Image 1: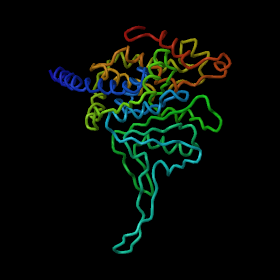
Image 2: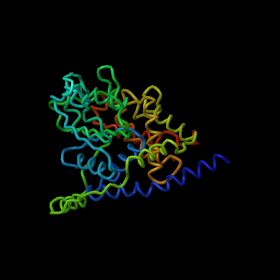
Image 3: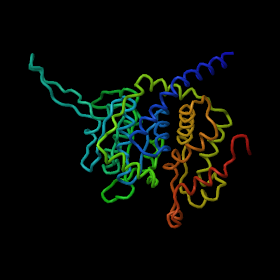
Image 4: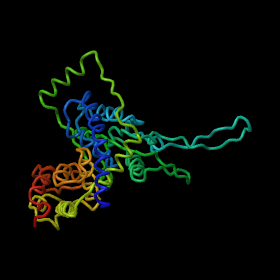
Amino acid sequence: MNDVADSDRLREKIGQRVAELEQVRTSIGQVIVGQADVIEQMLVGLLAGGHCLLEGVPGLGKTLLVKSLAQSLSLDFRRVQFTPDLMPSDLIGTEILEEDHGTGRRYFKFQRGPVFTHILLADEINRTPPKTQAALLEVMQERSVSYAGETHRLEPPFFVLATQNPIELAGTYPLPEAQLDRFMMHLRIEYPSEAEEQSILRLTTGSGVADLEPVLGREALLELQALTREVSVSDAIIEYVTRLVRATRPDDSAVDAVRQWVRWGAGPRAGQALTLAAKGRALLRGRYAATREDIERMAVPVLRHRVLLNFQAEADRRRVEDVLGPLLDQVPAPGER
């Protein structure tokens, strides 16, 4: 009886918030043409409490997409342009010397950096040295900043969207695979279709500029993140996620593409991320249970940066998607052997 009551309560709460989530999606659509899958995946990452890495060539609207999301959610937003001379203190903050004019006493005070926000856009993260990258990734993991023996907690929610340009590699510092694993999802923004590109030209070359109204506040978003954790996942779905993740590892895989082109597969953190992403997608679509479809739709963005290809794949000009496609086709679905 308690299980039924809990299920009804969860269904009711989800129903109250789904309409607001759809308004957020609609609001972003006023500014961003197309990219429906990327917008959905960003919202899933936000609901699941993970961070996202956005990759795309210049001019596809990565920065505008993140700004639009922040405006629609009525959250604090900071943008940091990552450059070769950016230091860790430029991100997390530093101590400054202040003086009490009444007593003349001097003391150090911690000046908070731009990471103390709700949504942080780390623009072109691969242009800054590893030391600064590591400082940001530590904050992403711990959700706090330790400085001079004191710990400063970040106010939830804390959502990092980092962008990187895949074509200008001179003078960049690519993120190591171990650090990429800190991102829940790796999203790729592709070129728009011809019709979408025409719409972009009409939208951006006129006199009117869309001013997005806030749709969802901080407290509502925190409630949604808590609800995401409550979305149910069956044992069969857990088994399916485990099979998918283990099948990315060449020594454990029966998938020919994996054995031929993969050097290292995904670790257990990938399974955690995929399960949470499936829960987030289910919630976004008004459901209180994750399904096989949720797993399959979120598998590529979750696993894309966690599967390391070998030299043979490079010689054969294969991409990670060439491995993940056969993987999803061949790994047995829930309930199958």
